[in-house]
Length: 326
Image (cartoon, rainbow, N blue to C red; front, top):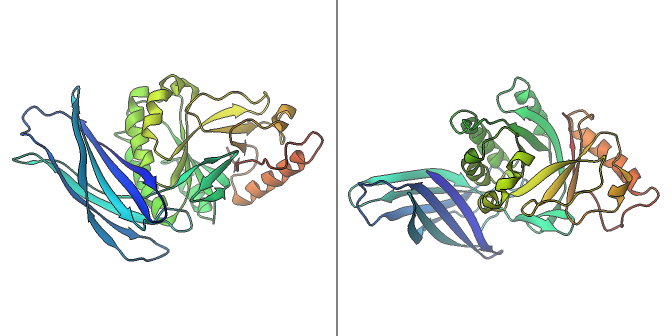
């Protein structure tokens, strides 16, 4: 089954939340199907608030080709939104029933995250959010736990490589899902890099898994998957898509559906044409700097000097984030 939580129209006093369930059509299921479930919470590792227990109502039910899609809906008053400093989580527990039996069931946590772009910057819950990230590698690599420990420092974002040959949904993705659950709970932002070898057919399951974790702010899409971008953007929710580009070339036009460019610095400073900022947020990544939080600050200082040199960009512009490590 493929599951997505979708944050609809939202504000400080009300939020529409939708839950989409897609699963194969089963010929011997008695109709109609019914959705029975509730949303409870919020809970947090760093705060407490009055909990709610609200039933989920069926919003739509349709059969498309060989799949069944059921969408549930709940209206939250005074919703609690997820941020790194206040990682509020809700629990959804539900099942889809036919007349005679249970078809599918679900029990997991979700987070409601208001995240997007304003001008050249990333904005989280009404405030500018500057990414400062360090590389952690692959989830099951030998150095991963050590790098994760380093990423636990305050306001540090993890950069995780997701290698996939199309079989990761059975092997690597569950490990990543478990790790991201912990990141959701403690408020640790994450950037996921999808590798070039990833099969397009694996991406819907991957993206649904990632989009259900409020800790996953950005997913980097490799060039090999850009032809499928139109379909992939339907699955990302408030998660942003990025591509990686070289600082040795002038800033490129980015494909529709890509939100952010991550600029890989081969020297300490980008090519001069980057002083004319492109019309999208850009995050600097220097792989020659050590994968340590303080190196993000050093990179920021280097680029601040570059910004203030001859032909500097407008004072209203700045980098959307700083990444280090290889």
